[in-house]
Each structure stands twice: as C-alpha cells, then as structure tokens.
Image (tube, rainbow, N blue to C red; front, side, top):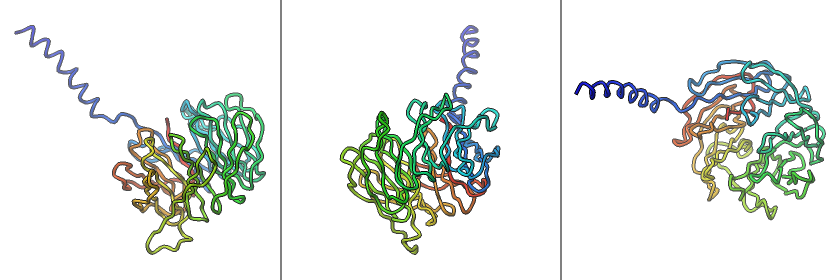
Length: 328
C-alpha cells in the first residue's frame, strides 16, 4: 500500500501538468501590420490581442510578408523603392532587398528562396534571390501591376495589372508571360484555391471577383455583392482569403466596411461581416481560428472568429493600416 501511494504521488503531479498543458493555448502567433501613412509596422500579440511594438520603417509601407523560416518580415516601402527586412528578434530593420520603383505587393516561391515583386511605376515584376539579396531579373507585365500569387504547384506566377485590367500568367521556369486574362476594372488581388482548381481575382472598381480556370485561362464565373443601403460603387473588393479546405472564402470590400463570407464551392455570398472603415487586406492565423483584416480609414484591425464567422475584437494600430502577415 505504501509503495502504491508513493507511486500515485509521483503520478499525480505528472497528470496535473499534462492537464494544464492541454488546457493552455497551443500557440500564440505574432501579427505584423504595415501602416501606409504612418511609415510604421505595428506588432500584435494574438494571444492578448494587443500591440506590443511599433517599428519605424521607410516611406509608404504596403506589401508585407514573413520569410518562410519565420525569422524575418519583409515589407515593401514604395516611396523608397526597396524591400526592407525586419529581424523578428530585435524588431529592427536589418537589411534591404533590391527592387524596381514603387514596390507594392510581392510573393515568394514555396522554398522561400525567390521573391517576386510588383513594381507599380515601371510595369514590371522584379525577381529577387532572397538569401543572396540580389536581383535576378525582371518581367514586363501590364500597366500598374499589383496582385501577386504563385500556383500551388509552383509552376505559375500570377500578376494583376490595375490599368490593363488583366491577370497575367507567368511561367516561373522561363519567366515569360504565357497567358493574359481580361477581368473587370482595377484588379487588386489574386488568390488560388489550395487544390489549384481556381484562381480568384478581385476587381476593385468593377465590384466583382472573377473565377478563372487556371488551365484554360478563361473566366468561368463572377462573384457579385449586394449590401442593402449601400450604393454599388461603394462595394470595392480587394483582399481575399480562402480556408485550407477550400470551403469558405472571405473578401474585403473596401469602403463598404464589410467582409463578405463566400461559399467557395457554389460562389454564393452567405454573410456580410461589419468591420472597420475601408477594409483592405487580410491574413489567417496558421491554425485558421482567426482572420485579421486591416481597416485603413479607422486605423484599426478587426479580428474575425473563422468558425463562428463573427468579429470578436478591434485593435487600434498605426495610421492607414494596409497589409498584414502572421508568424508561421
């Protein structure tokens, strides 16, 4: 009996520790928000939902993304014509990457070795070796390039040109444009479904999201939006986020101050979520429990509970928040 009691005394603390560990959050992520007019990056703790740091960067920061290893955050500072690199340990700008004039959005290959940057002022996509910090070349595209994404298989790079109103399909091996698809006015963002079956492109002035067959290079359908009490010209789709299971999509609707929830299979809008003023871009936490969206005019970030499809928190950040990236 004494031996059994001693054994249980050793077991109970272990059991208690395991129960506490199970009850604790699996992981607290860190979000970085680019503030376009404030020339800063706000750092948010996604456990406490508070801003923990503000980092001074170059002029007009917009596109922002973690490196694949999570050690650095890259931010496009458009008026400085470069990509700045922030060390996530020191919270300081430690390096720059070469870029063409007025970099806006960018994307990486799956390995995190190559960076593709949309340079709005010279109608090119710049190709950069991230590790060597060197320029590999440039690709001529349409007028005012912005939206950037890479297909799930890594073979195709997509760039949207705002003034040409096209989505350009670029072969990542040859770095040549192999197709251009006409969409509605002022395309701002592009996102593939995770299975690669569809490419979604938001058209800000056109007020639609075009669904493109990435093999046939044709528009197969369009998502439209209708919010009672709002004029159609106030509904301006920009950022897009699609869940990993490809079942649900979220679309930021700019000055409509709403995020549309879309059934990704039927392309039907199922709900509108009221957020801050002029909602722009978005990012999921890696576990997809939350979606963070930037609201440029109200200078805040709305936190959406993905499963419940409701806004649960608003966080004040810097002036004119534009982009958001969350630690991997």
